[in-house]
Length: 113
Image 1 (tube, one colour):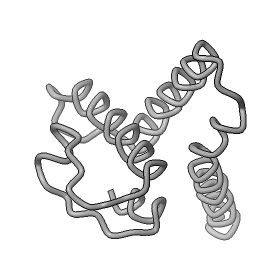
Image 2 (cartoon, rainbow, N blue to C red):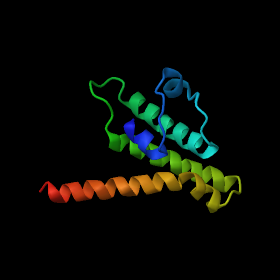
Image 3 (cartoon, rainbow, N blue to C red):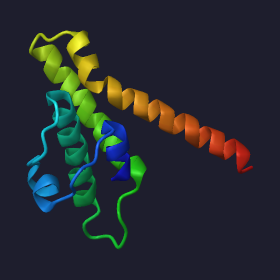
């Protein structure tokens, strides 16, 4: 979950009420709260899918589940008649982070060969 802190560029107190119930005790702006709650929802879904296994879910599964949440959010915004600008305002931080993450992974893969 260190990557969540990297994403929002702020320290997060990892307490049970945050992960289990989505109760955010710190004051974040609305956009960051929205992002945190969606990421935690994807993480909870991933852990629920792995509850009988002896391992934790891979990052890729959490990211996949999160992208599904993003897609559902986009459809919800379209149904409510909200614009792409509002969608981009919330998710721009995520897309920048994921692009940078994969650029770094690709660079590391080149140097590790």
